[in-house]
Amino acid sequence: MKPSTFQETIENQFDYICKLAVEDERKNYFKYLSRISAREISFNEVEDYVLNHFSTVDQYETDQKYFDLDNTNVGVKGELLGKGLETLPEKKRKIILLHYFMDMSDAEIAEHLNLNRSTVFRRRKSGLEWMKKFMEENAE
Image (cartoon, rainbow, N blue to C red; front, side, top):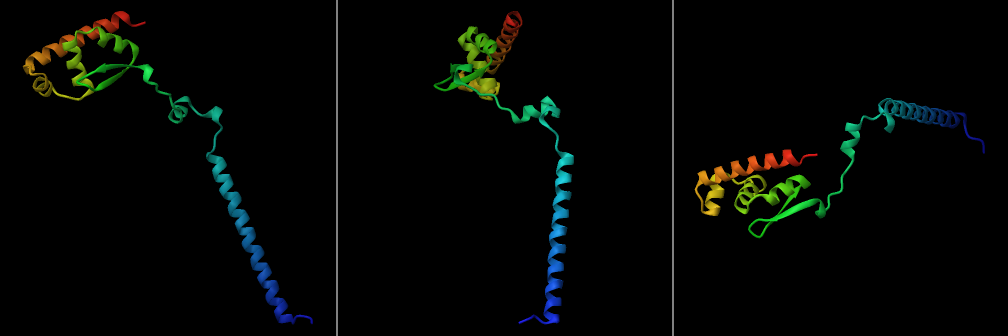
C-alpha cells in the first residue's frame, strides 16, 4: 500500500524540521567551541604566578623544629628561626612561643606563668632583639 500524499507531506515536513533542529544544534556547538578556544591558552603562555596557584609543596615533619610548650608540640618552619629559638634561654623562648604561636597577649602569658606583665614584655622584647641579631649574623 502506497501512503497518501497528505501523509507523505506530513512526513516530509517532519523530516525537514528535524534536519533544521540538528543543523541549529551543530551551529550552537561550533559557536561554543569557538568561545572556549578564544579563552584558552597553552601552558607555555601562562605566567609563573598563575601556575604557582595550582602547585603544592610537600610538608614533612622533619622540615620543622619542634618545641615542647606545656606538653604541646609547637612546630616552627624555617631552619634559621628554629636554631635561633633553640639558642634562646628557656624563659624567653617560652614567652615568644606563647605570644607568636599560641596567640596569647602579655597579660595572658603573665597570668599563665605567674609573672608580672612588665616582666613578660621585657623578656619578649629582649628575646626578639636577640633573635633579630642572631638571624642577621647567620643569614646566608
